[in-house]
Length: 200
Image (tube, rainbow, N blue to C red; front, side, top):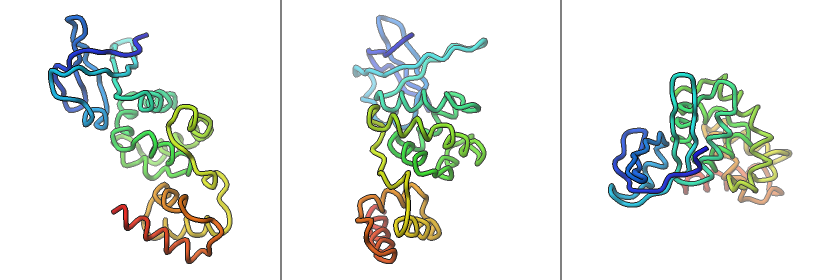
């Protein structure tokens, strides 16, 4: 199995990069996030790779860092999620944001990716929730706030209120995770909105 490729960046396309190693150009399908981090053509680059073999094709996928590769492998382990859908999700969400969406049950944010409908998004969240929580710290994917898995009291009410106001569940989690959970619901909503407005 190919672990990585290192060489000269020959060219980039809409969803791929070609890296020349020892006179051979390897076409690596990749995410928009990886493409945006690549150096200029002709520079040396290293991509972490995943080789996907089917009856009719042998495709190589490349990622700028190991976190994105780990997240991709986790995604394609879900029934109904192929490599194209995996790339589409990671082009919309960083591994950290993806982990937060899964941990907080925010399937709606996953539907922003091309080819991901509500049913598939729900399946991804259900199948990967335990894996994401277990691998979050060890794989460096994300630090999952403890209240995400045990929401209660005022934090839970404030989160519901922010969702009703149009924010996604993962955005609400990010905003509220920095606040003191013992605050009143009103204060949590007020400070959560301030945090969200500051990001905008």
